[in-house]
Amino acid sequence: MTEKNNFNEDTSDREMVFTRIFDAPRELVFEAWTNPKHLIQWWGPNGFTNTIHEINVKPGGIWRFIMHGPDGVNYPEKIVYDEVVAPERLVFRHVDDKENESVLFQTIVTFVNQDGRTKLTMRAIFPSTAERDRLIKEHGVKEGGNQTLDRLGNLLEKIVTKSLIITRIFDAPRELVFKAWTDPKLIEKWWGPRGVTNPVCELDARPGGSIHIVMLAGKELGDYAGRKWPIKGTFDEVIPPERIVFISSAIEDENGNPQLEQKVTITLEDLEGKTKMTLSIVLTKIGPGTEEALSGMEMGWNQSIDKLDEELRKHVT
Image (cartoon, rainbow, N blue to C red; front, side, top):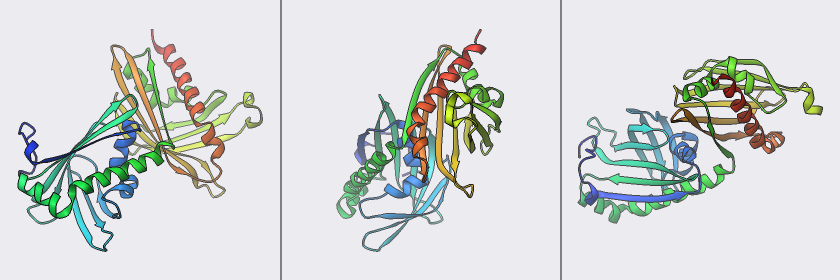
């Protein structure tokens, strides 16, 4: 088998194919495949655990880890990524960790949106039919694959209760919507629920760039008037005008440690001059004292997006 599969080649006689439909948005399922905090919890058949030594989910990136079997046997693993197309497709090779890095098998994973659910198809392509059949018979790799996806499904059920998806269509060009998410002069005008202003709004919209926003409650919020909520974060991805990903934290304890963290993914699709925005919020940390914020999270984000819509209308001629 060559290092990279020729996709024009018929490999059906040496494949294993798994298909599942998860009751979770595509962005979240893709996140579970690419975020090591999630991967470590579900990768491998029942009873396996993982120690990750390095992972870099990008074309040419390497994931090196050890799978610990329930019988106490350790299995060193190495994966090389060929394609990473968020949130649609992953292609990677399982290789031995020797000098020639011969390909043991290749995996192609596709993620298809089905009205908020996700159809996942995983194709494992082996060097030969005989090798595939041997691994099924001697090592139970087919059952192992099914158990692995069962564990993924169990994890998604837990995570989906801590996530939120909002979809809106704006009567504004995609470039303008992208700018409204990345230009501090614009974002300060709409960020936060109604009754909130942003006296501090500092953004460095590039991968690794920082976010610092301080939300201030106005008098119309009654007992909350004058209360401040600092937001701090870092951009992971900034792909104009298509996609923005950032991690942000809020609600600090008495020592300044964040008690609530979220990963926010914004995807923008051009609809002949209009823009379809899909906003995915996944909570990655929930600490004590965050119950009030969590109860109002959906309402707060929807009010923010309402304000974004109003601001966009001002800039559309």
